[in-house]
Image (cartoon, rainbow, N blue to C red; front, side, top):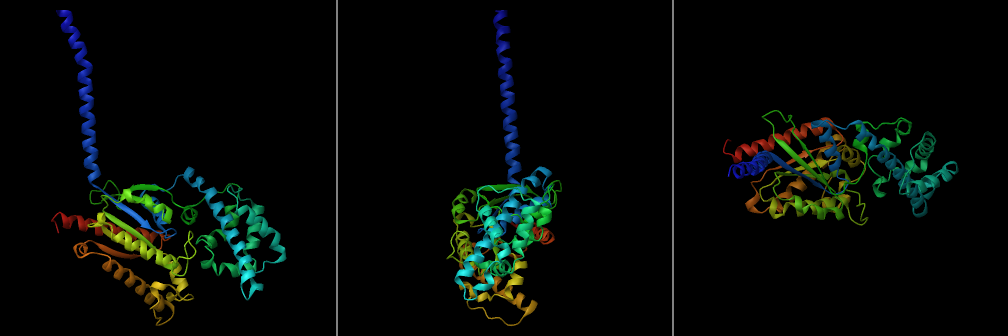
Length: 384
């Protein structure tokens, strides 16, 4: 009997341990569930090239530890790819304009750069790019400064020339250094298409401060073929941050050269607003790329875009820029209220003027977003 009793106690011991482990797991799950309830889910949406991913990178720099050396190094190949892709677009664009334009002579590349241009265009069409050497950088710089390429660059809006073109072309010597390590500015300018979903957790006032909310920000691909991946993220969203590149009113889509980018933005914003799962979701509209918009408005009439065809300029200089911006802002406001059913009009809707590359402005904007969402939470809790 005694041996049976001792054997029973022997078998009870692991069972008690298993029960203890199960209870600990349950406790941890309960703690994590409670913690998750305090995390605000933000969804970063917008079309391709709207600046979403630059905003995402700024958040990492501002409210997290930024980019470590290994991560910075990983951008070397991306930066070099941007250089090769840009010079190919400009070279091929100049040849196309030389063939089709009435004033074709100004788009003809000089004989000194002709062979170099053909070779660089071939490199830019490869799947794998060589490391940017000093010799290649000098050739790219020579082609970039060719009058025909500069004329072509002035029509970049027609040719899908990326916004980073001027920045990288003016920094070729540094980018081609044998010991080159990308800077945070290089990373912000670097253009790589977002595919799938990436996320980051942050707090605008620091995670250890009780007064601040903790946010989980999701960035998704903006190109049309990426948008089907958004749907599963729509549930439980505190706020949608929608990026609209207001400088792209005269440009067409990368994936469809017959579709105006601003019209695509309009249609996407309208579609997102009407999603049933966003009935009580706050909307933060970032009218982005204001720096480029400011330069463009003076030269390209706003009414070249079908949506803005009723725009009438009233002045010039800064006054005209402000007038044009307010017109665009009003168009988005009207679209918001037209696309919002009466039972949703009390959801929070704010518009912010942004330039994703301007770190101080992005920081200020997210502080305002944080304040808006905290006030909404207090209101819903009956504390305001």
